[in-house]
Amino acid sequence: MTEYRPETRTVHIPQAPVEGSRPITVPIYQTSGFTFDDPAVMADAMESPSGPFVYARYTNPTVRSLELAVAGLEGGAAAIATGSGMGAINTVLLGLLKPGDHLIAQRSLYGGTAAMLADLAARFGIAVTHVPENDPAALRAAARPETKLVYLETISNPMALVADLPAMCQAARELGILSVVDNTFATPLLCRPIEHGADVVLHSTTKYLSGHTDVVGGLAVFADAGLHERIWHFAIELGAAADPFAAWLVTRGLQTLALRMERHCANAAYLAARLAEHPAVAAVHWPGLPSHPSYELGRKLLPGFGGVFSFDLAGGRAAGERFMKAVRLALLAPSLGGVETLVMHPATTSHRSLTAEELAANGIGEGTVRIAVGIEHPEDLWADVSQALA
Ligand SMILES: *Cc1c(COP(=O)(O)O)cnc(C)c1O
Image (cartoon, rainbow, N blue to C red; front, top):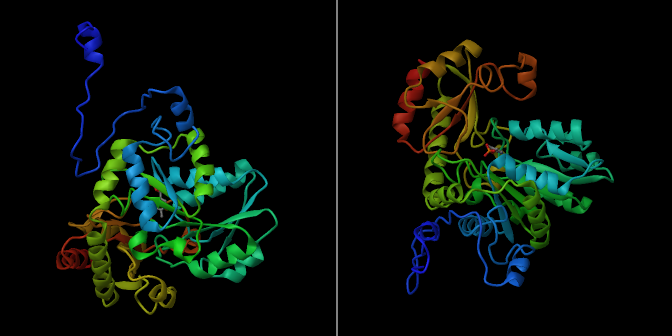
């Protein structure tokens, strides 16, 4: 470099060689592209999902670490990390579907996904039929020649319904259609949908996988390498790629996922049991309670139910509003899956535009509270929730 002038030398920073040792943590490759010695190698890299790195919209070593980690945990062939959960969902749906196609989705869906499916139907002519998440006969009855996929969520929001993945994925396979499963609420520690026959597994890594409420990200895992390669080419066109620093935050969070999930599940179980005994609470929608519609299936399918569930306050809308103002430790906030306990009152926040009838159709009452239980001490959480109920 000494042969160059300062203007040139400031641009071309030498890279410290890392030889004879390796970094312990995943390095952040904060670079948009890679340089090559050989144009033929560069040309190959642009066509191969497992070839040399070329451009960060294709993937990047930090992003690839995250893709390899989650693909491995889910038992898939390969993954694509994206800039958000919705980015992963759209990469897969738009990559698989074309106008005139039909898809079958479970009735109870994450809000952003429900909005996206309505938009696909209205603007792209992709018809959608909704069926219950545990009814393979309804799935078979809804199928048409142009049906391409069934879309499921392992555990739903906010009622924590558990999808009958073995039965639904089996029915899909017999119909010759793909199964796409959003596994955000369960994480691969509670459920690996590919083991039950799913073709694609989706995550909002914003939630449990990162776990610290500091990043937005998504990921799609593919059971089959061929399908991954096809969607990888489309993902490059769509441009929903994950940023290296965001991917790094997810890998950092992922390292403690097992410990966090254990506490999320235990805390949620504890709060659900205490809430179920409280006179101000009319109902608790947690799959571990015999009153929950997914009680039997949940016990068969999942070793735990994560941290998100909902409960109905006997006092309706006014009680819901009062509860939100009264909590001190739990935070009134959207999202879930982080270490902090968050609460939300759908009737006055996320679903405020709906009438009581429309709320009911979504399985939400006027007094329904959704809680995303964090990893705090369970007695501190119960003290906060019970003082807010009083
Ligand atoms: C949050 C969430 C999404 C959307 O993810 P973003 O990262 O917010 O784009 C999709 N599905 C489920 C189940 C979610 O909880």
